[in-house]
Amino acid sequence: MNAAELFVKCLENEGVEFIFGIPGEENLAVMDALLDSNIRFITTRHEQGAAFMADVYGRLTGKAGVCLGTLGPGATNLITGVADANMDHAPVVAIAGQASTHRLHKESHQVLDLERIFQPVTKYSSRLLTPDIIPEVVRKAFKLAQSEKSGACFIEFPENIAEMEIDAEPLGVRVPMTPEPARDRVEVAAEIISNARNPLIMAGNGVVRGKAWQQLADFAEKLNIPVTNTFMAKGVMPFSHPMALGTAGLQSSDYVNCGFNKADVIICVGFDLVEYHPYLWHPTKDRTVIHIDHLPAEVDAHYSAQVGVNGDIKHSLLRIMELATPHTGHTMRPLREALIEDMNQHRNDTSVPLKPQKIIWDLRTAMDLEDIAISDVGAHKMWMARMFRCEYPNTCIISNGFASMGIAVPGAVAAKLAYPDRKVVAVTGDAGFLMNSQEIETAMRLELPMVILIWNDSGYGLIEWKQMNRYGRPSHVDFTNPDFVKYAESFGANGYRIEKSEQLLPTLKAALADNTVSIIDCPVDYSENLKLTNRLGEMICPV
Image (cartoon, rainbow, N blue to C red):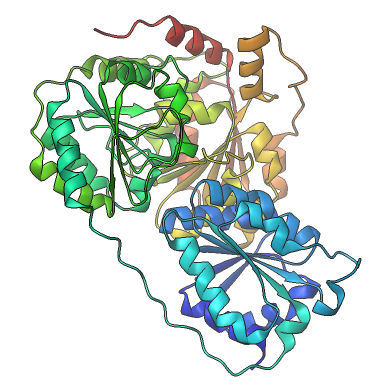
């Protein structure tokens, strides 16, 4: 067999289901080998879309998503999605074709040093210079991509190497066991928690990766400690649970930050610093921080952990829970009550353009609890993080590490492929939507029913929010949009336009029932952004 065929066998050995990408001249041998494979190649319309699909697939399943491009511009188009996966700690293996090794030492058509280009945005970047190293490189890439903290890896595959004959086999897949937490660290953490006056748990994306959400809920309930989650950990604590305080990270003078101000012990479980700057929630640097995670804490002046409990998160929570003394009362209950009141405030609002709170209320009402929302990046992301209630993890996907616009539409394609029995909604602004709207064709070709809900304000709403806060005037944030209904129909998809507030809920229900791609153009009133900022900024923390 040739090296490309061996490479594909190695991917099969890793359990790869899908490869998202675009064929090119320098990956011809790999594309041909895939014809005889059980791996399903998903032809996308842009490499960035392919990388975002691999990103979301990896985050939802815990298995490395795979994306493929050719050399030069094909490879560089992958970078944004690969960087997003790496900073969001989603397992991804990116592959790019390359020119013959006989051309790599000199200036040559479309040739870039891809191994070096991908190095800063991956955990591991490699080049196949001989076919006999393929089993080792592929195994290492998948092992590192899927190991904590998971992230992206890259393989450059020159076209002449792909054609070479080789007699080799894939390496066996070994999944390393996560170690038990050290007993002495568990005892110290349990003692600190037992003696705390107002402890608070902050749950991060590591809880999702470690599949420790049930243990977290049991821990919080038994010890009677309230829980806030980061944007990327929505659903690890069911919002219906009385210990749930909702999502942290909207801004420094937020409801939940009043909880941080009140807390004397902050228990960070699976928390990645990239999710929420510690200086925003721990500016005084005087609280006791307990770090519970697979790996030791990152170094940060505002995140100096008094004790680190490292190892399997599920086991760490269970061991501490066995030793710690439960607390009485719930001094932060007023924060939860204030948040619920805010969520309910505009459920019956009839104004047009629609308020963000109303859009989210109707979206949550229309979707089943295990359906999946993929949020793009923009002002709507802040509202989804705050107002969209989740009962299960991985039912609201938000990128908040690299936080790249354009993830929602391709991400929804990947979500539907990973979970074909669930409804999927891409929640996106008009700006983020047009960045990767070409993947509507991919969804239509693959016959993947999904809903794209566009929050239309004809501008970069989040940037205007920041500009108004800092300078009191907007700067170059306005643009015009195409007719989104006609745009949808040009792909063969269904298009809906919301003109009255009372149309949204029935339209969402109808779109979710459609057996195709449905696009909803919904006008949004982002003046609520500044009102929210002012209201939270003036709020006095409960005593």
